[in-house]
Length: 310
Length: 307
Image (cartoon, each protein chain N blue to C red):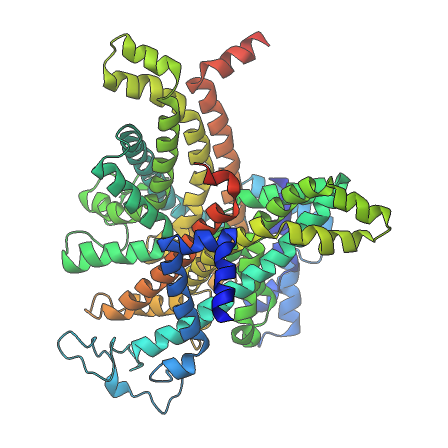
C-alpha cells in the first residue's frame, strides 16, 4: 500500500506541471506563483509526501485538475456504480461458472458440455469490448429490449446511489454485467471442471457413492466443497481483474462509474484522479486478499484446525 | 532441393506435430495471410484510405456489396468518411501488428534479460527482480498499460503526442507483459545453470555475460517462444482495447481498435458494418495466434504429449 501511495505521490509531483494545466497558457508569472503557493508545491518533498499521506488517510485526494472538484467527491459519486457492476458480475460469474463447471465435469463427453467448452473458448479469445458491442447490437439495436447505456433510474440513499431498486436500473445492469462476467465465467468453468474431474476420481467419492448417497448430494456437497479452494483463490485475484476490465465495460456502456472517470482522467491527464484511482484499486486488492484468506478459514476445516492446535 | 527441406522439416519433432495438427496448419495459414496482406497493404488494398485524393465524402456509408445499396467497388462498404472498409482494415491491421510485435519484442528483451540475470546471479538482485514481477503480476496488464499510457501522456507535451503515441503504446504494452518472460526465463535458467556445459564454460574462463546470453539463452528459447506467441495475441488485444478506449494510436492512423470505436458510434443508425468487420477481423487474428500458441505449447513441451 505504501509503495503504491508513494508511486502515486510521485506521479502527482514529478509528472508534468499541474500549475500549467490549471492556469492555462496565458497566465502571468505572479498568478502561477500564487497557485503554486496555494497548492503547497514550494515545500520540500518529504513534507509534501507526509501531507499527501495524511490527506489520503482522511480520504482527501486533492482537487481534480480538469473538473475542478474534490476528487474524493467524484470518486464517492462514481464508486457505487462500479461496485454494483463488479459485484453483480462477480456473482454471475461464480454462480453460473460453478454450475456449468460442475455439469461439464460430471458429464464429461456429452454434447452439451462440449458446446459449453467451445463457447467458453470463444469467451477467452474475444476482447471484452467486442462482446459488449455485440450484445448491444443484438439486444438494443435489433431486439430493442434492453437499454444500451447508462444506469437507468437510480435511487439515492444519501451516501449510495443504487440501481437495484428500480426496474430500469436492473435492466440497465443486465448487459454490462454479462459482458464483464463472461471472461471470468469461462475461467471459473474451466477451473471447476478440472477440479471436479480430479476429485471425482478420489476414494472418498467412490465410497460415498457406494454408500448409496444420492448422486446430486455427492456431487454438490462432497465433491464441490473440496474443489472450491482454488476457485476462491482465483476468483479473489480475478475480482481485481474485474475492476480493471470494468474500465472497458463502462466505456462501452457509458456506465457512470470509476472506470469511465479514470479513462477520462487518462485522456485529459488529470493526475489527482489517476492517483486516487490507483490508491483505491490497490486498497480494494488488499481487501480482497484479506477476504479470501478469511474465506479459506470458513470453508476448509483443516486450516481452522491447524490454527487452533498449532 | 525444396522438397528435401520440406522432408527435413517433416522429420523433426516440431515439424511432424505441425503437419499433423489441422488447427496449427489452418491458424498459421490465416495468420500468414493476414500478416502478408498487412505487410504489403499498398498492393493488396484496392484503395489507399489515407490519400485524400481517392476518398470522397459522397461515398460515405455505403453498405457491403451483398446488402441493398452496396456497390462492387466497395466490397465491404465504406465508413463515415467514405473510406473503403476493406482497405482501411488492412491498413489498420498493419498498425495493430506493428504495435503487437514491437511491444512483445520489447517485453521479451526486458523480461528475458532480467530473468536470465536474476536466475544466474541470484542473491539479493534475484529477490528484488522476482518481487517486482510478483507485484506486477497481480496488477491486470490492461490496467498497467493504461497507467503507463496515462503517465506518458502527462510527461509528453500535447503537440508531440500524436507522433509519440505509437511508441508510448509499445512501451506501455511492453511494460505490462514483461513479468511473464522474466518468470519463465528465470525458472529455466535455474535449471540450465547447474548443467555441465555451464560449468565447463566457466572453467575455460568465459565471462558471465557470454555464458548467459550465448550459452544459456539458446537453451531456454523454447518456452520463451511459446509465451511470446500467446503474448502477441494478448498484446494485439490490449492495443485494440486501448485504441478502442481512445487512448491508443491517434485517429489519423487508425488501428483495428480505433476502427471499432468509430464504428461503434454508428451502430444505432444502422451502419453495422463499420464496426462489425474490424471486430471480426480482430477476433480471427487473435484467435489464430492463440490457437497457434496453444499448439506450440503442446508441441514444444514433451511432458504434455503423453496425455
